[in-house]
Length: 135
Image 1 (tube, rainbow, N blue to C red):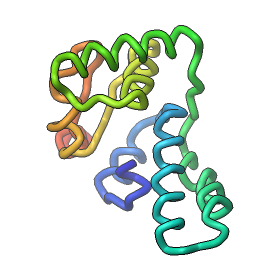
Image 2: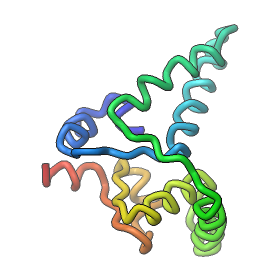
Image 3: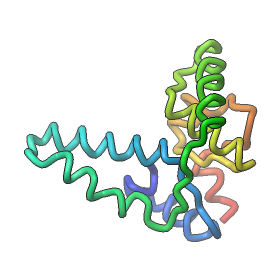
């Protein structure tokens, strides 16, 4: 999401990562955010406008689809973290299950890291700002 919002740190990090991955859940969240923005602006063709951004959103990434096992795990993870008092959405659960299945690292913006991701134990999660220092 940081890349799409034009964060220069995200651009720097993505240039250094050999094969960046993006969960299909992140793609869905971005399309939804764009659709909301365009609808609020009163655009009649807001749906078409949002879908045009798919190429921009996924440019440079390998999009990882969700499997049945990931879906089941996402439901468990969402419940686990919600029960712990963390605002953890189903999309967050899918993103975490995807990263977990690939032994990946989640890189997220600072506010999201503090609000949702800093207590995650299943995979390595780094705030974008800290990760960028290693690039």
